[in-house]
Image (cartoon, rainbow, N blue to C red; front, side, top):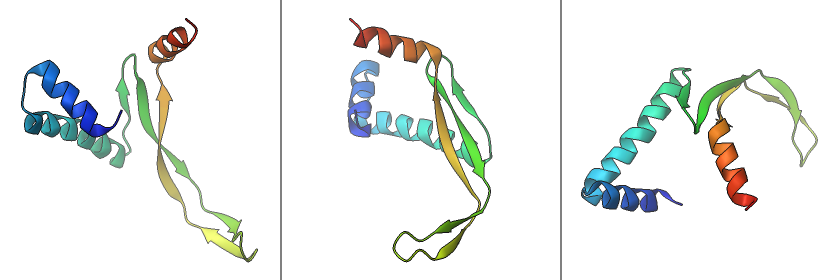
Length: 95
């Protein structure tokens, strides 16, 4: 599923315009993004949780030249699947 399909399903199910549905989807994703940017955690019960993992700087290697390269510290979003979602997907697969 892509974002446009999600917007269409939301508009159809909620009986709202595509424009309003897209605003709601954008609001949802922007809220998650903003919380993660502030080093927060977003948990959607039964679905999963987003959090931020911090990586320290390290010395890596350029794969083409083999030269040492200093890699800056970084923060990346990570996703953990909720137990309920994991079980639903697994049970659907095993039918």
